[in-house]
Image (cartoon, rainbow, N blue to C red; front, side):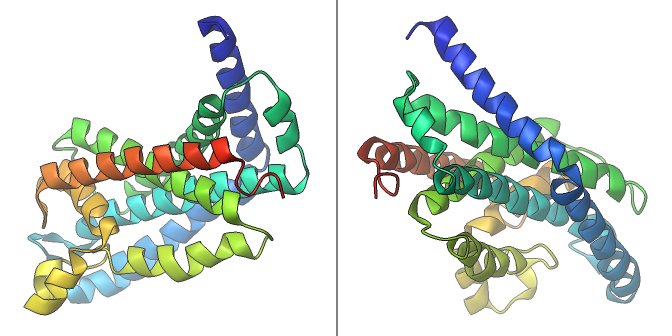
Length: 257
C-alpha cells in the first residue's frame, strides 16, 4: 500500500467516525454539556460556596480542569467502544478485514475518531465553564498534550473493551465499575493532600489522578504530582495499549468467533 492509499484509507475511516457521532450529536455532544453544567452549578456554585478555597484557588476554578478531563475520558472511551462493537455486531467489521487496509490503520482510524470526539467535548465543556469562572491557561502546551494523550489512552481502552465484548452489556461494565470510580477518586473534586498519608499513597496508584493533575497544572499552574511523571506515564500507557490492541487485531481476537 502506497502512502497515498494509506492516507485515503485512514481519512475515510476517520471521516466515517466523525460523521457517526456528529450525526447523533444530541446523544453524543449534548449530554456531556448538560451533565457538566449541572456539576458546575451544584458542586461549583452551591457546594463550592461552602467549601471555600481548595489548593489555593476558588473551588470552582479548582474543579473545572478535573471536570473537563472527566468529559474527555468518558466520551473518547464511549465513542470507540460503541462504534467498534457495533461494527462487530453488524458484521461490517468483516469488510475492513478483507479490504486492503492494514490493522495499524484500522486501529489508528478508530482511535482518532475517539480523540476527535474527546477534543470536541473538551472544547464544549471549556466554553461552558467560562460562564461560571475565569480560566487562564498557564501552560497551553501541557494542556493540549495532556488532553490529547488522555483521549488516545481511553480510546485505546474502548477499542480493547470492544474487541473482548460479546454483548452490548459487556461494553458498559468497564465504564460503570472501573472508569467511574477511578475518575471520582482521581482528584477531580479534591486535592489529594487533604487525604491521610496512607490514602495519599493509594491514590498515587490511580492513573486518572496524573491526568487530572497534569491538566490542572496546565490551566492553573499547580499540581499534586510531578507533571513530567504524569506525562511520561500517559505516554508509556498509550504506547503499551497501542501495541496490545494491534496484537489483538493481528490475532483476530474477538473477531473470528
